[in-house]
Structure formats: structure tokens, C-alpha cells
Image (cartoon, rainbow, N blue to C red; front, side):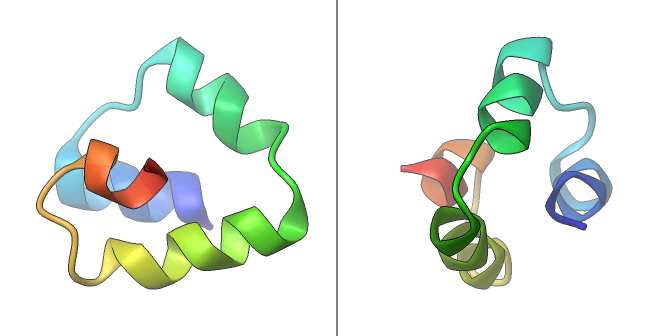
Length: 47
């Protein structure tokens, strides 16, 4: 779900970021999902 939202909002996600997302812990993914709504960039979501 996170990858789909990032693609819709910011365009293609790099392979490195895709790997980071695919290997993240559940709690981290939930935190990132919450940030998608207000972030202005992928970096704001993941950091």
C-alpha cells in the first residue's frame, strides 16, 4: 500500500527506496503511511 501511495503522489520510487520499504518493520511502515498525507517529498516520508 505504501509503495502505491508513494507512486501516485511522487512518481516512480527508486529500486533502493523500494528495497528499504519492502524490508522495513511493521511499526516503521505504519509511521511512514501516516506521513504520506502531509509530506512534500519521499524523503519527508521516510526520514
